[in-house]
Length: 240
Ligand code: IPE
Ligand code: IPE
Ligand code: MG
Image 1 (tube, helix red, strand yellow):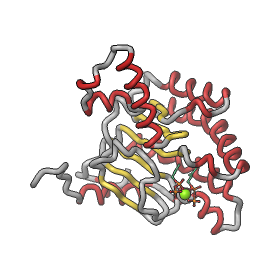
Image 2 (cartoon, rainbow, N blue to C red):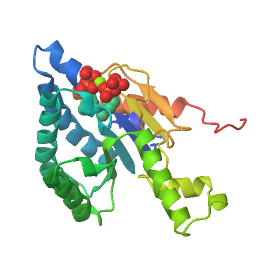
Image 3 (cartoon, rainbow, N blue to C red):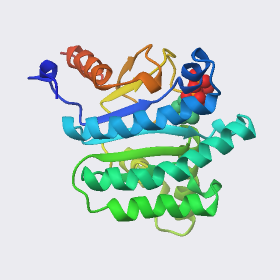
Image 4 (cartoon, rainbow, N blue to C red):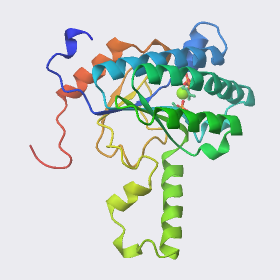
């Protein structure tokens, strides 16, 4: 690791919106799919860098509930990339003591993809290093809606009492149950919006947006984000 981060606080949980694969490809006169392919290589590298830096949780937005709107060609290519990279990721996770988790509604994927996800989670669950969380078919509103539905069902069956629902109860019904909230959100490629990402969890997260397109993201960019994070004053609604 570079000396740049000496004495810096490493955020415990970094959330990433990896955006700009399409623009990266367009700039080079390549099909969008090539941007996604290169983006997967960057994801692999980022997992290794984050693990080395001592980040405890890294959550990346890989495919949103709204991304199904894209052409069937692009969605199909993304699914093929998942298939391929799930196998590679198992090797990388094992070599780097990384535990993989998934958030989002995986039921919409093909059976072999669901099995691949389950295998990746199962075979890395004892690893004690970085927890790498992949958000696939994830949307903040969808997550909250699914949580509300399960809470309502539990109220009907008597497991839960409506007037005893607290913020902690809410959290325990989210896909991220048991994970700390992100300290730092990084979005690449310059767009300053959340795009339905972790709507509950990002309530007090520090936001860093870089113009760098996701396939070009590297250790230096991550270090820039962490340096900026160290200059922020987190107040959580209080006074300092
Ligand atoms: C992010 O890159 C990857 C996914 C959303 C799957 P984009 O595909 O959104 O790239 P741009 O925003 O079109 O450049
Ligand atoms: C957000 O990026 C979703 C992922 C990175 C998976 P999008 O490219 O889909 O978001 P918008 O359309 O620019 O808001
Ligand atoms: Mg985009």
